[in-house]
Image (tube, rainbow, N blue to C red):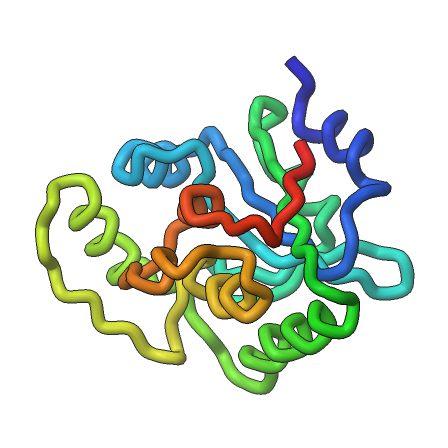
Length: 182
């Protein structure tokens, strides 16, 4: 099986501004998300390109921020994995949506929403109805990316019914407006 860095080297040339990257990790938190959500993927971010370098913007334990994509790939276990979701929207539509998601966190701190993420995982795993209180100052990775996906019509209308989206929901509710690169 191909390790994550070899896969990145193989598909790097196909990753473009505005693509979504879904990660499959091997750590404890990744395993909890995968188990509670019956999912393969446990993290998601949006890729943007600046002067030929690829970056990922996402919500993680440090809040919403951008990192070099190659740096983030190298942080994963060699047995980790990822998939690229390419929107079929026009370049202009992608740039508008990308600008919106990047501006959303500009000039403010958006912290990682551990508590609401945990509650929604328990709701999914056990069928509970714990109250999830969302606000603009906290996000989990998939919740941060969800407005981008909706704007570019990358997900079906069923996706809009979710209280909080999780990474696997990008695949569960993927529309025909997406090209998948593995």
